Length: 189
Image (cartoon, rainbow, N blue to C red; front, side, top):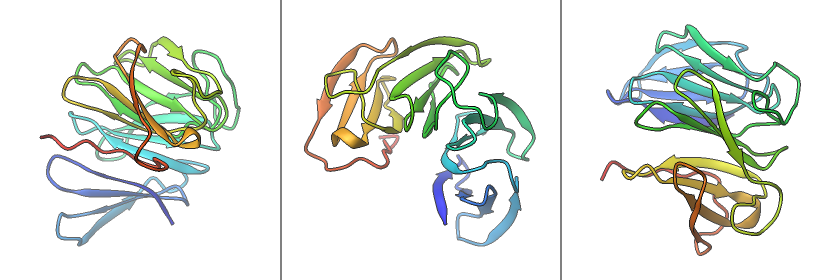
């Protein structure tokens, strides 16, 4: 099974297999390579940032990792196989998205129902959210996307809505007409 797919600027397709490997295909679907066997206990989200770095969330390993396109580990946040709710720990994270300035957001979805914001170098900045149905609360924040204005779109799966926030975590709007959001993608246009 594949938990997530991401496409880089060259059109190369990266598929994150539940067994913990990333399969890479050219834009025509021809297999190129497989790497990272065992990099995650239970794969979930995959993101490729503007610089081509590959970000992966390990839901049951409670980590977020950043790799070079060649598979070299550059950053690992969270302690492997240890759930937590502090500034540098997660409880079953689901997704990660990287802003234009390099700051990034993690949906700490299954266990903590919060969004965590980090600096480009992985330093904790802030978090927001708790379990609930009010604006700014979540029931499994499952997917993340940023639009051209750097607004954060959160697929609040359990509440069957998408919540929209500014970069400081301020609630802007919600959409409730789209069903259950398992994933979100915003095209360049």
